[in-house]
Amino acid sequence: MRISVIVPVKTYSRAKTRLDVPPRVREEICHIMLREVLRTLAESPLVHETVVVTREGRARSLGEEVGATVLRDVEVGVNEAVALADAYLAGKGAAMSLVIPQDIPLMRDRDIGFLLKFFTPPTCVLVVPSQRLDGTNALLRCPPDVMGTHYDDDSYRSHMRMARQATPNPGLVHVPRMMRDVDTVEDLDHVLRDGAKPELGLRISRLLSSGGVSGAP
Image (cartoon, rainbow, N blue to C red; front, side, top):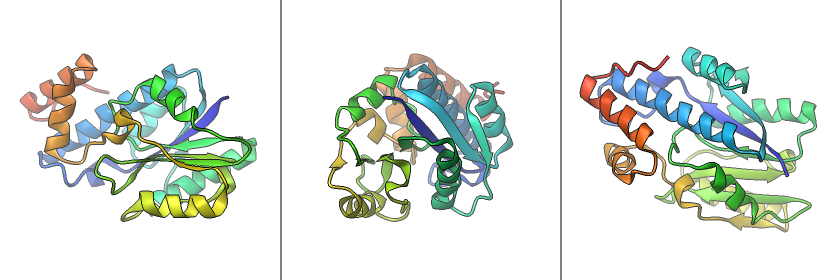
């Protein structure tokens, strides 16, 4: 069972505005988190293709570096970015898609396998909420066009409502590392204290101490 993963990436300068750090530091944190997410996806034998949708130049370069398909976004919104990827995947005949954000750097490749344990054919939608239960941190759709997306306030409840209408096999799945996104300094502190990915923590720590010069390409 191999899936296509969609990663919408907002321009770094417009992302993570709730993260109370200097703008340069915030942009570098976005890049570090995206690198970690793409690296994790590249390690998963379940991922057939990763599609990065963005207009951010550094994100485009990073996507190409790891072998992802990169689509240029006009940055109207997340739903429009996902729809762009949906159209691309429809042309490829993709059987299953997984939408995840760029800001879940603690995710492991085995978390994708855990999520798929709840997959029920032939049609299925699985939703992984954010830890605050105010967003959607992973959205699995089989087939990819079984329903659209509604990334907005309280999106996980909207997605669950849509899923119940779209398929007899909807599911709300708690995957702790996928649920842990980074929106605030407190979230960032958790990543540093977690210790599960020491290299990630070290890069972020060095970035914070250097005032925004990470050395990341």
